[in-house]
Amino acid sequence: METVPPEITRQDIELLVDAFYEHVRKDPVLGPVFNPAVHDWDEHKATLVKFWSAVVLGTREYRGNPMAAHRPHRIVAEHFEYWLSLWHHTAKQHLGEEKAEIFIGFAQRIAQSLMYGLNLDPQRPNRRQSLPMHPDTSV
Image (tube, rainbow, N blue to C red; front, side):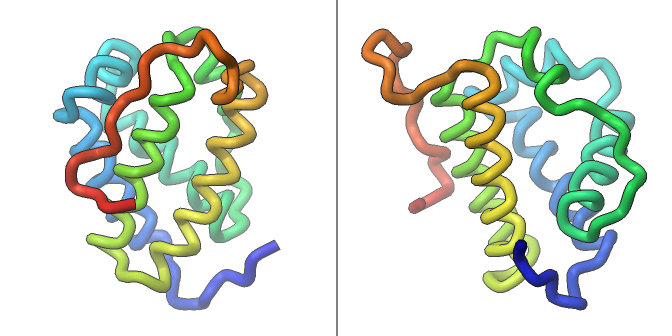
């Protein structure tokens, strides 16, 4: 398990979640996936602050099931790759290198777990056409 630097705060998480999902809402690739699924963005972001607080800070306020939340949506493996590239960019932009790397590491492991649980094997021969990386990244 990674050591959490004491300087990571709930405010860092709120800043990252807010900035990231503002990008997602307007994004030409992720917006069409998220916007129809999220009926109340403020509520969704509050839930995600609780989720990331549980992941990074070890709080116990999150009571959801990420696998069940993602299962009903039309998500392909490439959406995760694209999501990660945008997360990477946003974390570094708003939190700086050291803090961003903590969030990026957790996000990569969570994405792998969700892809596995949703049967989205990126090696399958019949997968849909790859999506481009987010244009603001050089990941």
